[in-house]
Image 1: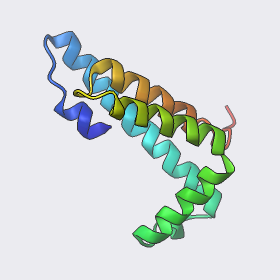
Image 2: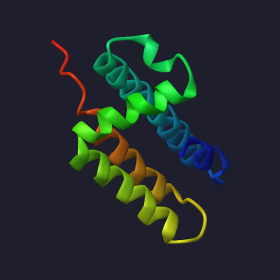
Image 3: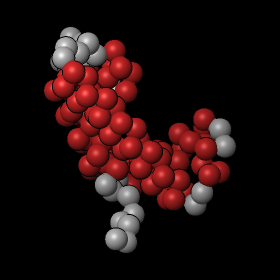
Image 4: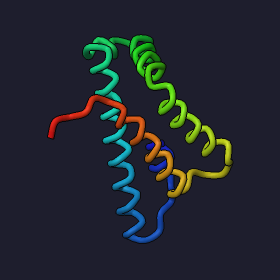
Length: 109
C-alpha cells in the first residue's frame, strides 16, 4: 500500500500534504500491527527470519480471523477493481489496516 501511495500522482500542495500524511499513517499502522504480533509471540524472535515472521503473523491472524479477513477482503476488492490505486482506495485500505491494528493489546492512557 505504501508503494502504491508513493506512486500516486498528486496535484496541488494540499493533495501532496494529504498524501504524505496518509503514508505516515500507513507506516504508523504497520508498526502498530508489527508490535502487536511481536507481543503476541513473546518478542523479537518472531522476526528471526522470514518464515518465523510469516508463521507469527499467520498465527495472530488466525486468532483474529474476522478482522484479518475483513482487511484482506478490502485489499483484494481494491486490487480486483482494476485501475491504479487512487487516494480514495488508499484511504479505504488504510482504514482497514487501522481497524486490524486496533485488535492489539489496549494501552493504558
